[in-house]
Image (tube, rainbow, N blue to C red; front, side):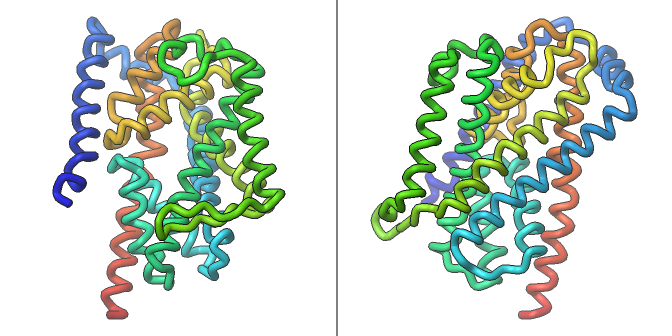
Length: 308
């Protein structure tokens, strides 16, 4: 038990250290004055657009839990689900190991609403799969529309960056939709049983995850300068790869991982401008939600203590 407790945090910390070392080597000769100038050069209306993109992303994130609760057929207040989802993602994205940390937070919250450990496990699994499904669907469309978006990652992607790969991924997604339509039997792993989502649930999955990723990528896109900006589709593709890498690294907040992958994906842009946009992303998508989430947790725990 002790090994399981320390393994993923250790992986995350090692990833952070290695990524920061890579980042330091990448930014030799880089001036903090350049970073400050890049932040100051972001127009006010672009800050507003980045803020609206953050709101869109978190509204979509709340949809993950609503979809999972609908799949479970449980009655939980709409406001409770929304606040729980916001708090879970705000904390998990900053803590790292988002699946594990998110499971702990959700179990504490939804347990107070009568959900069992098994139901919370199904909820966490469905939320994670919804994100993966959305990332695949979005990646497939990007590969079909503009495969050169992924040229900077050809050595790291599990599939070749071609239109054929995009169509193959779409076939996989279509197979999932077909399985829901025909009503495949539940997946059983030991005592853990997952029932195949119904078509209305699947359609919601296909819609909500791409919206969340588009919103999150929009934060960075609007914070980038117009000079040398490669366009939203390129920024979206780079964000898709870098954010997925940050999540898989289990590093707290994807620290270092997000930056080094994003810089690799936009090699022709001014590094100071890219880092300034990523700082805006960290502020709006990670740090401010973290502060709000901590307040929500304190209020929740105080309420639970009062009931006890």
